[in-house]
Image (cartoon, rainbow, N blue to C red):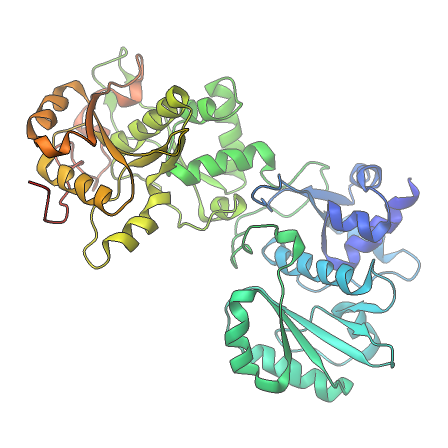
Length: 473
């Protein structure tokens, strides 16, 4: 076994979880060989549920039950933190960040809370104990808490009071995300030094929300990554943008060459509880030879969190199935055709709500930013709906600065009606373009009434909109 393997085993047991970067600092070497040796013995697993935007998908090491037992047999066996589970990963990784920052590599001067409890015995630290304690040059101790989410401060205050009395602490410190510091300073007063701090392992993402890992499997020592992996995270991010997609659309948007490979990848994510599938009702009666409709996939709340998303999960059954899936096709086509960057409706909704204030208008179906920075609002029309209302929305959205021009992509049977309703002053920034589903696309062919799930919108009303008054004459 490589010499660094036992050092890695000790450090992972000590903190609960470590990123590969943290492990490299704590053991003084790259952990690649050491982690492989531990995984081969079934003691270590490499998780990939932490998706740091712009920083790739860093591995997070954790111990299996047999790994924890092996760590307990080491000389001077490390103290394992309580409640080591995936939904506490950011808290545990932040404690490792703090130890590295304050102690320059995890020497004996820094004690994790588990190590401190082993020394002092009866102190519990309440429901929110500190991340650890640092020995000061004068022989004292500095207890440090980490706060990553908005919370009630009662448990934190009780934990501070218990440790002040039990350990005779003179100073305590609370490290918190900058946005949380003001409220903590008001609540704690002079009882603690509140320090703005962002754990380095977060990169430029926010901390994963409590309960994000509900449904994630426990590591079993298989040697394989227990999370979705880089490719799985890319699939989850795609579903986060659009809400729903078929396996064929997922394959086109990722590096999966065929739809059957995408089905296998989605089925794997489904077993992890990260995606869910909807089996649409009915069969196609016309177009592409008929046949059953393909499954439609969406990300669960755990899947969105694993991909770094903050939006709510969509319902398992979409309300506007045909329009939703057609919009994915439009986005893929326009990005390929123009080289532009697509922003989906879910990404635009907060900006539109802010712009319209108390009288919200319909959110555009998408926005395409072209190479020169020109922004094009996209509206997809599969039925005529309320043409005047949709054109009013387009006019108002441009007036508010959401885009520089508007493209209405209409199926041929609808395009004529929109061109007829377009007023002369709008022709300079509104374009009506014909759009048809890709040849052979069964899922977008005109179907039977059963094609729409119970309780969903009907074909007649699915694109109806009512925009704010004041359309340009």
